[in-house]
Image (tube, rainbow, N blue to C red; front, side, top):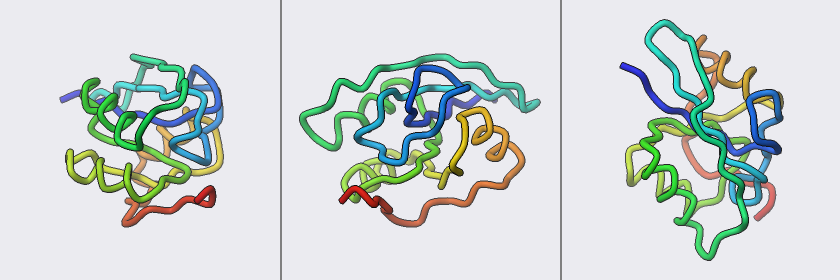
Length: 119
């Protein structure tokens, strides 16, 4: 079964780098992964800011995201993803493509709590 992974990014495609701060990223990029480990970009949403910490969480829920790879995330959105059963993974400092490849290979660790240098 295919699944959709989302990553906060500094740019609109998989060659861009993961954002260090979930809520202040420039884009949210969605990637669909199939059972064979192939992947393709399925959405790229520009982040124009938001009125509350749950707004980007709800945006990801509406797009059927099952996993998030993050560089850093605050407490409220972290709890929101847990509430909606979206798995969180600690990303590496690299491109979205590198992060997806690491996730497929089982090299990314689950995120067990909020971690954000920006707060």
